[in-house]
Length: 250
Image 1 (cartoon, rainbow, N blue to C red):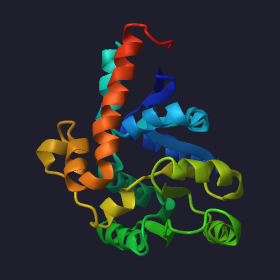
Image 2: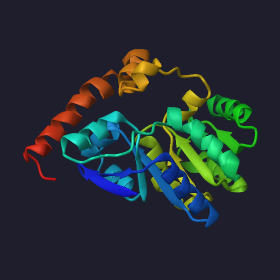
Image 3: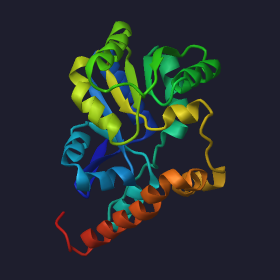
Image 4: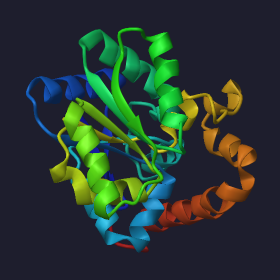
């Protein structure tokens, strides 16, 4: 797997099979590792949050969860051979892979009941899938409640811990608690549980298959996402163009 740097952020050019092999190797060897992802929102967050950039780049594998960074790499002259891999699609492939290989999961995030609903729905699709527990994302990220959540996870020791708080909260929480948690692969899953539970609808397939997932999400949730997608996309591509004509340092 090759990685490139775009605007100072590492992105791994990896296929689904390569990512799955990476996960299986870490679990078989009982190792701990991060598996993070980036999109335009992540690229823009590094402007405000230096720790976020450092944390993303500390991950041995950073998958591309959006068409924007891939377009950005092409503008800058890189050839990104693999397509984006969004959790709304990947969660089903990942669940099937984990079921086939006996890997266990824990879902942490989303509103009350959503992760549990996602668990039941995925297990109905993949009967051998072992999801050892779920917990909502609206808990106190410090103090006693945080300790209690970590203890719940450590009691079952999952191979994969999927954390879906949204950026950058999920990354901040992982950065602060990674060493305390007994799991193998730590993944930042965003709205994964909302999709997997059927709570959050996706746009039509012709949009999601042609790089317009961002537009579909904006149309579904305009009040919440207008700033991220309308202003955020412009900021990102202006930075890419400045970078290309060497107005800013690499």
